[in-house]
Length: 418
Ligand SMILES: *[C@@H]1O[C@H](CO)[C@@H](O)[C@H](O)[C@H]1NC(C)=O
Ligand SMILES: *[C@@H]1O[C@H](CO)[C@@H](O)[C@H](O)[C@H]1NC(C)=O
Ligand SMILES: *[C@@H]1O[C@H](CO)[C@@H](O)[C@H](O)[C@H]1NC(C)=O
Ligand SMILES: *[C@@H]1O[C@H](CO)[C@@H](O)[C@H](O)[C@H]1NC(C)=O
Ligand SMILES: [Zn+2]
Image (cartoon, rainbow, N blue to C red):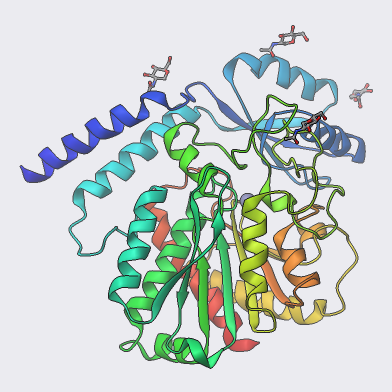
């Protein structure tokens, strides 16, 4: 009875809060596969010069690109693809249904949660809820402290959770940024689950205790707070920040194209309407500047720097902006091989791995290249978490724990091997 009442209340809250949300009913996600360099070029140009929403960017010949479209443009888009002989299939038939199901799943888990933490770390949460959880953790657990790296364009704190058993010891650091791309909810959820794992295991789990005694752990669970808040309030599929671009009606900068490492090159757009808009100059954005300053504060101590993204199940190293390989690539490759080996051994989830530019696509101005090139961090990686397209960004909450467990296993194996 109690559960029913709570469920009803949450359903009501969600119904009210969803009133202003974009209704994606009838939207589809297409998977297109370019077979020739010309077809690839066409898809890239299209992405770069329009507001068309690529979920997976065109990467290489024979690699799929996922495109979200509304029902009205289906005929036009499929005709456009057909004219260039680009084959496609429908990956997601009705995004509206997927969004609705996601809201229901989240509400149901909320209603059933009876733990004693500020949030259920096995569910998705708003920016405010995540901040409340971190504050509570810092107030109650002596190894946790919070640092504000800056504020977002709309004034939200960009918070780093620091887990350290002795801050004055200046131990080697493992650094994580999550949810730079706001719609990639599984990334923040994975970071929060790992934070919870480490903080609740310290002192009781010997493996965790050793990892905390040896290292400092630093997480930015929501690196793009404005975009993230917007995915909850209005548009579940928002990727960029929410800055008003001068001289354009289009909103937002792609933070992960705004770093000073090959800034302005291929795989980023100069068009404010594009989902990969890089901004006018490197570090023009408060969000990228905050990350730059947070990682620079630990210069010389950061042993691994991991940027969490989704989706497509990939483990990626420098470089993103050029197909040239870094001199340390053999060591990077070895580390990725170990990480992916342990990750896949957990539940069989298949990952590909290698340098970003070849494995996925050329992307310039990205965190991983900045951390490597400007901060000298060899073990700097981007992880593209689950899944491979069944749910895309709307990964159901019941996949948070398995995703986090396999990722954590991969990271631990890597950290122990480097
Ligand atoms: C979204 O639009 C569809 C079709 O117009 C409608 O059936 C559905 O109820 C709407 N969903 C919400 C949450 O408003
Ligand atoms: C489809 O293409 C036609 C011709 O280019 C254009 O007039 C129309 O606005 C397009 N429709 C949509 C929904 O984009
Ligand atoms: C598409 O394929 C047809 C038949 O193979 C060919 O005639 C046509 O030139 C192709 N078009 C493009 C744009 O490649
Ligand atoms: C916006 O762009 C216009 C025209 O380029 C320029 O004059 C103005 O100073 C810019 N404003 C800001 C806030 O950058
Ligand atoms: Zn991303």
